[in-house]
Amino acid sequence: MKLNELKPAYGGNCEFCLACINLCPQKAIRLKKESNPNARYLNGNVTLKEIITANN
Image 1 (tube, rainbow, N blue to C red):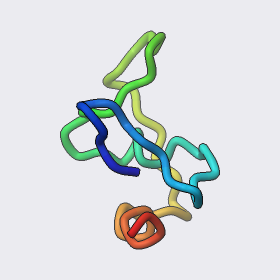
Image 2: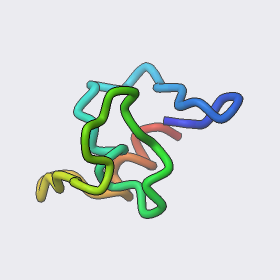
Image 3: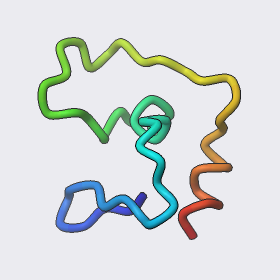
């Protein structure tokens, strides 16, 4: 996932698991109709490093 004009642009490997949203350390990526942006689910099987590597 990369930012394109301040909006997320998902790559061809994206499975829309939303891990990038939940792992964003600055909480800069949000869903449009997110009821509680501070509530984040952390999937123990996916790391931020794995997301970055998969999208490079």
